[in-house]
Image (cartoon, rainbow, N blue to C red):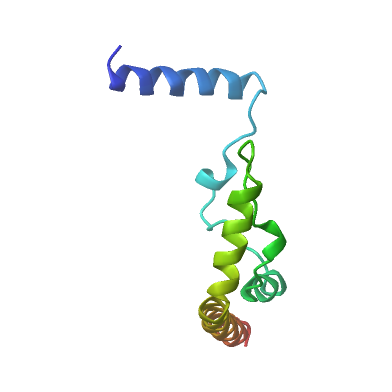
Length: 108
């Protein structure tokens, strides 16, 4: 089967399933307005970068030494990573503040 045929076949199957009620209607593609994104409160929450060192681990069998090495490396690079987190957080907060002012101007 050629890729073009596979695409057409997949589209036809999706259309049949959509007609049978297997899929929801594609309302985003049919509407004239763009989909709504997250609200500004959620963006403010996401803007703060916080790295949880407890999430550093290895899933391999016998991964304790690997986890230990990762945590040691993280501790050795703490000054560097903390500065990166701070810079990224400042940038994110600035973007959210700009979006808030932009949204406020649009409402007025």
